[in-house]
Length: 265
Image 1 (spheres, rainbow, N blue to C red):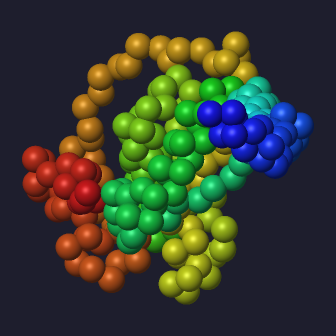
Image 2: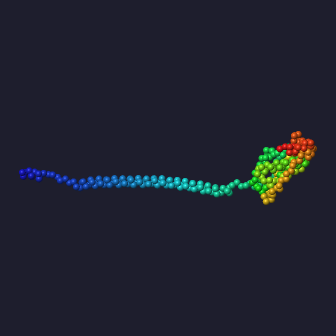
Image 3: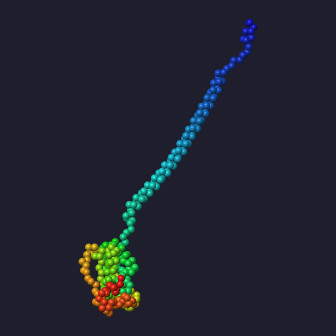
């Protein structure tokens, strides 16, 4: 029994030292974990910073675009307000006209009716008179030298009255107009050419600035009957006696025919 105990006690068994080596490995592992976590956190921080910069840049671009758009809208509004404010000043100015205007309306042979060209001329004169109420009109009727002086005097007045009626129809008040007839006395030329006669068959308009305070209403019209055909000089003829239907007056024996039927429309 004692021999067995000595063998156990005399055996060479080295002691196992575990403490310091284990602590070193755990420290290395822990340091690695700490470094990894630090690197991860650093990466996250860098990513967040980069993301913030990108967002800030995008925000700045959006804000810049909004500011630019707002400035453009403001400029457009200011321009519109400026144009609206100055619009009355930029309006079309009323054209100035002279104090006296002369115009001639020509007629066909032996006619008191207006031609189409004459109506166009009177339309333009009426438009001007409607815009300038200070102007009055002297309407002078003329004829050529064919026919008797008395007959031409009547024909000149009928032509002047036809012009006046056209202007009244266009809105011109009667008290702004006065009609007279000079007949053949106002002939511009005295030869027998067609051009000369055409120049004499006219109504002359003298449009003059008078002032509304100087225009008075006409007196009450007096009704007069037209002279009968028997009172017309048998020797009087119509102007330019080229047409027998217009130039030959009615016979004295026909008392029902009047001057109006001779002159036509």
